[in-house]
Image (cartoon, rainbow, N blue to C red; front, side):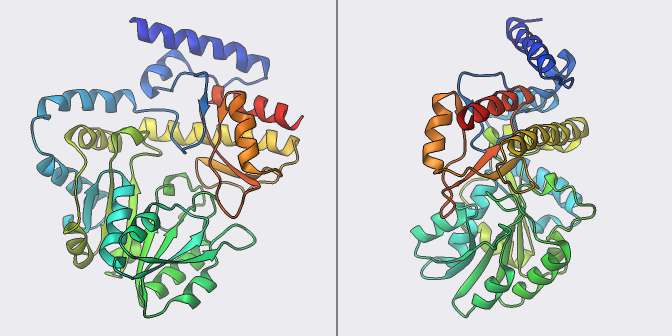
Length: 372
């Protein structure tokens, strides 16, 4: 055991005592620490960016290290190989796939391609802002539609607002920051209807966390050659946020237009890691299980504090803080926990990411002290 492994093992050993004192028995074994690479507990616990606290897995790390021998090469050929694998996974052909530097790059390129120079994007408020913020810099206009009383997309209002100016409708499903999903029947009907009027962009960064059986991906509409673009990422369930790799799925007519504005295709290290991540089913299952466990711990504390929350379909929870989020942010940070930023107009709501169980126990303790 090298020094780094020893330090991590002592940290995990400490967590056995911490968990035991709270009646928890799901601390990691030393073997799991090596395979699944949990981040160590730090002085400032960062639960603000919806990162997976595990990974990259040992298998992915080894693939990335091996790829250093190819670091002198441009990534295009390697990206093409990954695209072939993803096309098979999604049930489409190679020309339906675009590899990008995280799904955020795909969102930005899409907004630039279809809505620059005055084109309109319709989007929920609040939602993930990368596409809209970037597109506005290129002259796009944004038509914001407030979420409904259940913090979900108001699909009736969105569809009502589509006009000749609308170049794209952005749907983050599950939505960030509210963690809600559209009912499956409503989702398919809505996306199909929108795609007949304009382009529908379905951001599915958190799709893997949905536990509803047979919940549909809008890749199904892509296969029908609809005007639908779907984004996926390796940042969340695969634990590769720092490596920056994701992909878009769309019909060839749309991908051809998007490729004209692409700047980067990730890099050979991230591509090698992504290929291995797709094969590492053990880590994938582990990651989802630990997210479930973390959410249950947070739910328990929120229930004890009588703080309302949205039942999550993601790796984060949106709860009603009952106080200005900017005030809560300072109070929590002063006690060593970083929480999510403000999401206007919900200044009395807080988004908290799931961390390792050790981090979640610490968050629960700090939150309880703030409201105690």
